[in-house]
Image: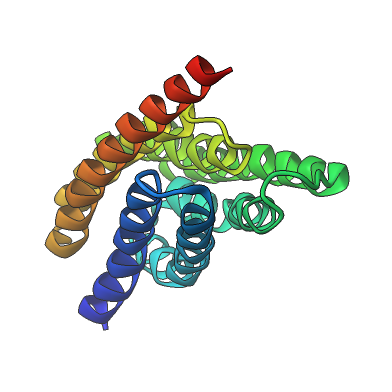
Length: 197
């Protein structure tokens, strides 16, 4: 079962990063299609990651995976509507869920481990900030989300190494390559758009 969950969660999250990164190389219509597919695939990987993380008492990481669902849905909504239709209530709900997940996961981990007492918890904090802020920034069209995803990938790869999950560690390192590519392409596209104005 563990191998199945690693392949499921890892392939969904890697596919998301590939779709997001390669989308930056296409014209707007194709870019939008790839990002919509990327958000959907991202959502499909959440259950596997949550099960894996809860099984190892990685409460911070598990809560942010679950707590990141609203940000993923916001990203999907904004991409479908091409960032033209702002839903203020949805934005506020996502912000509330994001900050609540941060507080909940951190509190449970501190309680469960009697403080911030292990390397895995430090890595989880990196995952927490990288995942939630990366998803939130990208959902709002802010390219700094790519930088946050880099923090998340490095932290999660370290956590998976410690917990002897080689498939997920490799997936995180491969994802890091695509995130770096996506960041570079998004940055270049942004600069080109500014020059055209």
